[in-house]
Image (cartoon, rainbow, N blue to C red; front, side, top):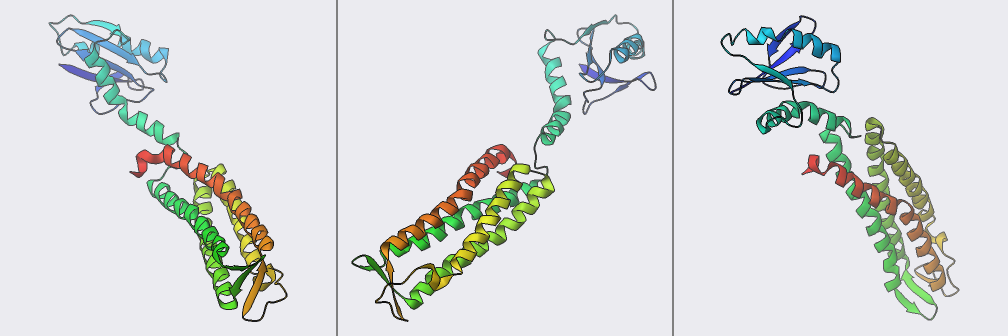
Amino acid sequence: MLKTFIFFESGNKWVEEQSHLLYHDLCAFVDEDNHVIFLWNGPQSTKERLKKGTESINQILKDYPSINFVAKPLDKNAPPNIKNLLEKLLEAVKKEQEVESYQFSHLSTIRFHLVLSVILLILPIITFAILASSLLWESLGNNILISSSNYNNWLLYANILLIISLIISIPIVAIAIYEYDIPIIVFSSTSIFILILLILYLQQGIFLFQFQELSTSSLYYIAKTDLYIFLIIIGFAIALFEVPNIFNTANFLITYKKFIF
């Protein structure tokens, strides 16, 4: 049978402990079957504590008056059952230390951030797909033909998605500031800046293109070259924040997956 005791230096006494250990503890593993006491001095403990604890070891031995115990340090040659018990007692402090090593420290902020980040990745792609659908419009020679109502709806849908993306970016930045995650703060702030520019750019409406001579108030003729340049500008602007955010979200998912699923 195994018993564990922790040495309290302030009271110069050994107290039985069965739940957990800390790195600054001095612990005695009493192997009653083999009459051995294994002493474990934590990595944050001191030699002075080990000395005092060893000198006070008789406090434990008084419960075994007829048995002669041998005291030895707990090293790599200790029996497996002793090592396993040590690992079990250190589980709590190791888990606490692991949590402290993560930038995000709350389960709610981890999950909320991931959901918002995934949505923010998807919406700009849908926005670009809507704008790129202009390549399917009716063409005539070097021009693209589109009715004024369809043109306005085309820009309206893209603007709505960009505005939603902008709104989603704000709580992402707020969470990153709360958790003090500098990379996410930088990426999200950059996303907000680019999204604002894109929204302002699309707000130009009919002034985005120089309509060709045959255009009327209800039917617009747009030069294919102008449309291609427009899509390249939009695609490049979206890629400026979309590509870094893809890597950032993937890295976040890899780092915190154990807390998400």
